[in-house]
Image (cartoon, rainbow, N blue to C red; front, side, top):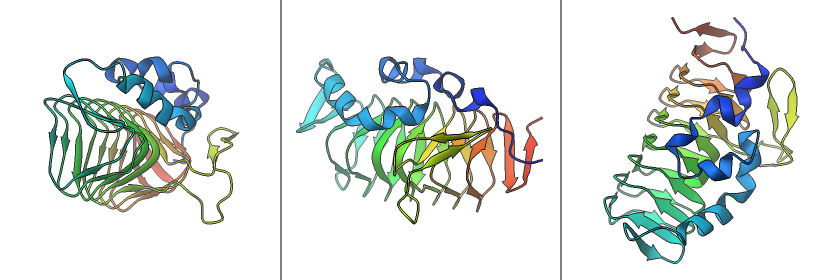
Length: 225
């Protein structure tokens, strides 16, 4: 079975349950998730200034919930928000423009840049996540990464049932709710994966992948039973 791509697959409303992110009001202003990438930084600053007493300002533009567990070896650059009961582990590198939801795990030696992580997202081991949005309880296996820029530095085009020009040279991956990415997989620039889809380890994924699927390899994508 070739990649199953439908128009609704790549819309925010079909990828994400917005009740599981502090960015709900922001994301609801867009149709497609990559449209929101440009304004993540400004949104985090505006949201951070409104946070209540349960949050502590750790540095300029960096807020963390009092229940968040942040290892002393982690680096968090602003703007960034670390949500309730989230964990930022040893040597994590949050470069900025990162909204980390409730109950998330940002693991050892992971790097985040210009991202929204919905509640319950886990990027626990040696992951790079840049210019991406990860839906509720999405999980990236050890060593899996989002590749966010093409080798020729040209505009990223989302390839679904048609081509969508993003106007951006940096677009990582848009993972729907409950997506599972296997270890050491690469999500190529502009990858969009529908809800509840699983990707086999060591995969190189590109384009739009339907919800409720199992991605075994390019050209072999089956419906989840």
